Image (tube, rainbow, N blue to C red; front, side):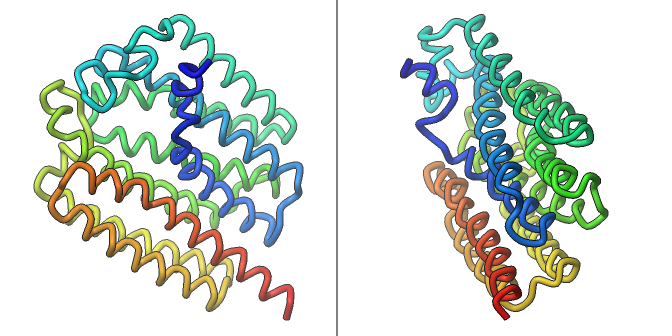
Length: 284
């Protein structure tokens, strides 16, 4: 059972957190405050199911590649603890559970769930044919945003796509940092990534993406009228981004991985800013 636990990365829940924060941003903004508890439960549990399913299909797709990388050579499928067939059965079971869960929402959300599932499934294979698998991962993660709006409001307003953009850009940022740690080994294996594509301009492009993310955060403020508390937390997130630039300055592997993990705090900070804005509004 421990092997399945590791296959689903339940021992390393950072991926769940990074997927969960934009989902919560969207749910609270769509509901203009605390969302319906049933919807909140569906999306939190759905986030866990989709992230674990994504890890399983990723390790299935990379089962021959992982043994060539020091950091991944002991993953459950590569190490022979779990067969590829068993991994696929688990993947389809998790996807079926996620679909069953979303069936308690509405038709529009179910349709979007199929798009999200498709993107999550093709992402692990995309690194064979594009240098921007991080973009596909970002789109897969960001699909929780329009799903949240359809679940709460029944449709996807134009404003929701700004949150989608924030989730997409943010994923590009932190997953490029993650890819920077694996760049040398990926080059030897022949796997593609944004870190390889950006090459010596990686830090500069990440900086540009961080600036774009901040601008989108402020645009979200203008659309939803969140106010000074949210704005203060956006400024705080900018400080966190500067710290991440310091971490990746020398492109040292462990520091890049630390920057990736530390992105969790950006998600937390923005979520706190959104919640505080609603609390202050309702209180006064």
